[in-house]
Length: 114
Image (tube, rainbow, N blue to C red; front, side, top):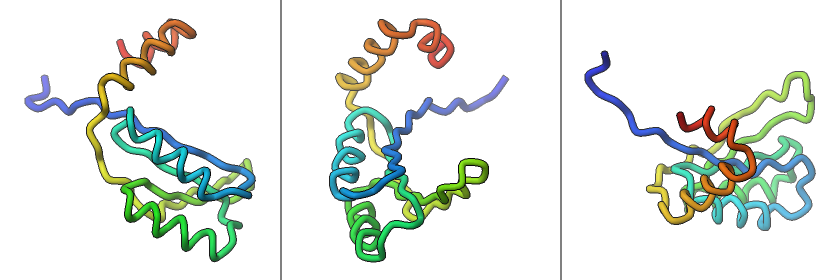
C-alpha cells in the first residue's frame, strides 16, 4: 500500500494538422486552461519560423505547453518545446465537462474516473 498518493491530473491539447491561424489555436489552448491542470498546443513541425516564434513566446508567457510533430502518421515524432505550468482546475468547469462526458458516454466516464 502506497504511503503517499498523488492527486489525479487532467491534461488538454489543441492539436492542429493544418495551421493557418496559429494565434486562434493558441486562444483555444488558453481557454482550455479553465478545466485541466495542464494545457498544450500541438502543431506540425512545418509551421513557419515567424508563427513558431510567436507561439513559443505566447506559450512561455501564459503557461501553455507547446509541442511539435511530423505529419508522418506512422511516426509522428512529438517534441516538447515549452512545458506547461500546472494550474488548479476551476471545479465548476471541470464538473461541467465531467457531466457532459457522463451523459454522452457513461462507459468511458466510468473507465476514466472509477
